[in-house]
Length: 287
Image (cartoon, rainbow, N blue to C red; front, side, top):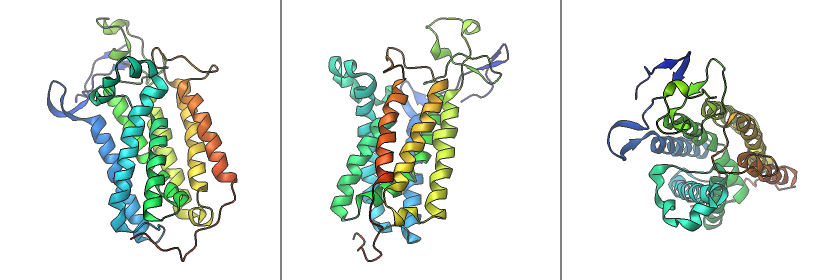
């Protein structure tokens, strides 16, 4: 991956390779795959730490089972959600494209749904309160979002709208094939904005709430609700700078990302306003 790229009119020309190290055609270690690995490893480490600190009803030895549920929920939900929410026609006309994971295509909203279903199954099988599990997992989710957005930038995909700010980037993939780089308009590096908002800022917020308050124990589900609303807000901010996906029409004048986030706000409000019982210290731990 080269960081010594050309500059046109003061704007850096994106030329980062999507591969980490050597590769042969489409075969190699991709940063996109590494981003998922780093996100899952971070979640694993945090969940074990929660258990050892006495803030989790899930013992450390059950964390691997929870991670399997999370991984399946993210990958299946994110991939299927991408086609259902953004390219339903492709799913009907070429369903095998669903398996072309090397071409990219994951939807965070689909991942949320997939993880929710997976956590419901895990909570029931381990006899642990579902909302408690949800609070634990959302406190780790921004790490995966952070690494994922960085991978989007490295891949030169999901670029921002045209801009002449000094830090704008020229993304060759944003233009028609064969267009001279000198004619390609610079754009907001919106992937980095989203990494900072959806990843770093949201991670700091949920970790602060988890460790510096008793919200997770006093009102199970509230932290998950706060996360959903906060994500919807920062996602909407990021969408202001992000170029809409080609061929994807807005809904009610809103980008798809912003529109789907409205449902996260509703779910978050429900979790925050509901009157749930606090965790009983005598609740038996799974295992």
